[in-house]
Length: 133
Image (cartoon, rainbow, N blue to C red; front, side, top):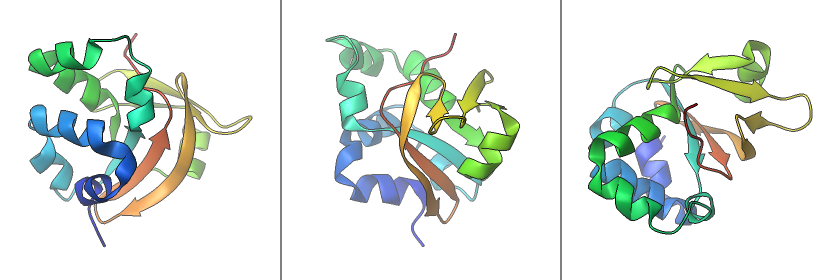
C-alpha cells in the first residue's frame, strides 16, 4: 500500500499541498511509519486563500511548516474515531474541532473524501485550508 506522500503525489488534486510539503521539508516525516491522520486540502482549497498567500508562505518556511503541521494528527483516526473524540490535537500543538453531526467537518472545512487508507495512516480530503486560532 502507498504511504501518505505517494498517495498525494499520485493524485491530481494535491499539487499545491505536495509542493508545500516539499518546501517545508516534511516529506520524510510523512513517509515515516507514523501513523498519521492528515487533513489534506485540495488545490481548490489553496486557491481560496487570498492572492499571494501561497507565495508568502513559501518564503516563510517556519510559518508554512506550522500551518502544514496543523493539518496532521498523530495516530490513524478514521471518521468514526474522530466523531467520538470531537476534538483532536494536531502535531503543531493546537486543537482541531471535529463535527460529524451533519456531514463531516474539520474546523471550518468540509471533508470531501474520508478514510483514504495509506500504509502509514489515513487521509481525509478537505475543501478549505484550516488555520490555527
